[in-house]
Image (cartoon, rainbow, N blue to C red; front, top):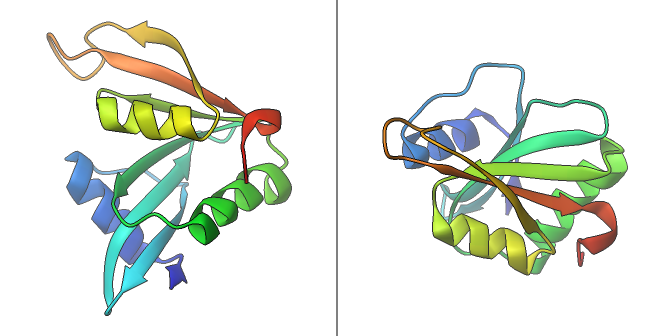
Length: 125
């Protein structure tokens, strides 16, 4: 089941090891009463919104809901991930994203971040 409540924010925050400061929105997947995957959207800038993803068990319906929210509800032209996790980069690339840069020491000394952008016209769902 797709959910959009504070449990998703707690799940994603716990998975990535830091909290998020409002305003943000979130969408997640719940199974057997537990959130197993989620996305937090923050840094909304009109044509762009940043996202942070965590978890597993992603479904086509969930990916379609993410695209619907970003591209239809928010009317963004793109969504951006800033991550040090290669698996998040791979997921974003499967969703039409491209690595657009590297932020050196973004997460601390020796912890660089990839900047990955997914454009509306490249998102498959």
